[in-house]
Image (cartoon, rainbow, N blue to C red; front, side, top):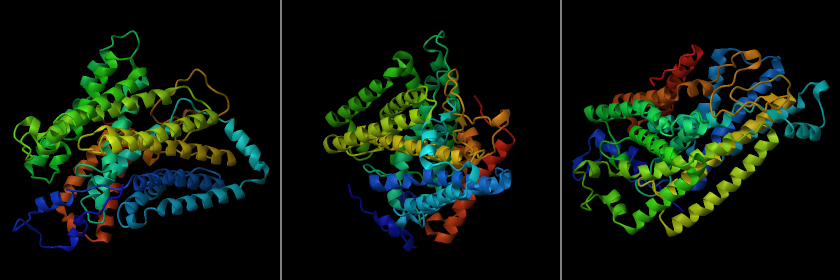
Length: 529
């Protein structure tokens, strides 16, 4: 499906804007800047998402090369933070702004750079450790991995958070392509994916997946705990609502409605999912997800519900009454709940005991087959049911989010396996937030979905930006929202030049990352539940 770039691309060239014969206020101008957009192609989103795993691979290879040259890991916290930010975050900032016109070439450029580093590592190994390449491959396939940690889960969730934090501010600058922003009604924008990926990532590490609830406890005990654990999200949702309304901050009403926001969606989806998982067995969550998504789509197609979501009860976009005012946020809960339940099934699948490279290669093949089937279903759904619509969170949107989330996750697994292979070439090297090879399988250790593994000898692993953000994910997202608001209040983002935009975005992301890094260095985890 081909989308045209909306006319707001040229908005920055117009310094005096007219709206129905009147000059637009700054608030109206910013709202218009993020409205009536159509999204981009699935291919461009796939290409864009490939940059994060490639950046992660590049960082890992650079650390291994450093160890090969100096015989010790990078221990300086200052240089470690600088390396992580410049390699893991900065390329993403460039790719969604000034380098977006050549985004299809960027994965090839970074991949070529990674290949160059790998060749350098392979050619400069110590003479006594040199073995035939075929033997290395055989040893790699037989390598056992730490079954108590799945780093791709952590990296996936952190990168979804980082990409979301970049986009929520960058979208207000003209250098951020309008096709990457959220589509108005139908379409696939990068930010449309981010919303669903957040739901997917939360479901992967939910208590029901991690099986923290003892089997002897009543079924509804986890539901009671969820009521307690979601109150920070409710609190943040209320706080965002009050702050946005009090300062007349620009908002896109058709996203969630007048009073609703994403914090409320996260909270209510978690509560509803806990209720469903208390009623239905966990291993049938995929059946519940299919029934939810299909039934919701049938109701959209066979009743006036779709017209109500898009145009209100009077057909003229009325916002009178709570339901009319927040119809997008309230009714899209069904779609997000379907995504959450399907993601729970993915989490349960990942939790199955795998402690070898061979086992994970088989899992990658299975997940790739699943992705292929999902994209086929997506094509059928868009042709015969409805195009992708985040606004309604319809069946096509649910399938698309699951397909691209799994693709994103698989790419991180492949990255981790590549780094494991490279570490076999350089004995003693290590990469933070990556699998460690172990000599013997530990059959007693159950896999964990999250957390940073301890290093050798029980020592804490080197501090890295990924583990720092992972420790305080909700705080990082909250800080990004607050900082975004402050920047928009203080700066006329729409008329910013490219150099100024890049400077502001880098300072914004570095500040958010630096705060997380300091908290992690002091081992501070801010939770209120």
